[in-house]
Image (cartoon, rainbow, N blue to C red; front, side, top):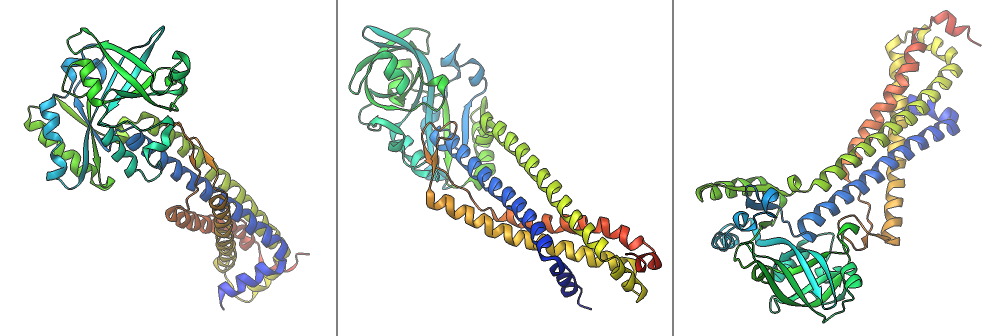
Length: 416
């Protein structure tokens, strides 16, 4: 007896009921994989936003205690300029490293003539920043982040960028001259002149009225230091993170210690919290899939068993054992799962094509600008969902089949 052919013929006896059950499984399959594809895309964007748009790199180097004490004693916790220069030569020696980039964070007062406001600044070397944007696979080049003006340049270290909120509140425009006032590493007040070169959208509403970006040279002049707050290490491949992290730890230990090397996923609290949240949502969606598909298959099998009770009794009378009856219905359930997975894959591809053709855009958190919305078809998700769906429908069919097989032969033959 060909069990699979026999099971398939049984499913075709009531085509409408079988089709509804397969469609229920297909919609569950599609929901899981579309949401899984969006989740994977979301994680890619959040990762790129931190590593590339934020200029943080795959690894960060800073002095122990920098995060807690940089605002109270900035000079003590900066990476010395001499060490930063030597670290900057690493890409020539270690081909796994693409770029070593110094960054600084500082705050102070921005004076625009008759108006003034508090600023929070992120400083970087503009040419380094351009490399970060260029290497991103989801964010595009840096110029697309700007609302007005052009990107900062190494050749003009006294030009800065401000958020739209800072521009609005202080009445600024492109080419406006401003004065930046902040503390030096020695605790003295220093002032430097700057010119507005561009405006951009803030990645968060909290920073919209105070965030500015500076060339690293201007920030160092303002703080009167050649050091940097952090050193961002950009790699060619993420797979090299553990090995390069160990190499950097060994290198800094030979410098006398006192430095930390942190991976991007350890530093991005927002990424970790968002990933945890989406994993919980994904778990809920998966649970809904289990309930819907299980109830649909169990209902289908229960109805089939009621209709085929006499047939089951006949098979038992001809010598088919209990496990044979269970096997038959289990195969029918697995075929429903396979059919649901196949139909779900078709539906998933259709949804993927619609989104790809329509190409909608949205503004992800931490980026501050619109990017194309994408839904990926993740092979791992598709594979495991297919296997899980077949196992689930098989198990859901076994439950009523066990009850049917336990019924006596005479009782089954006398069923009306």
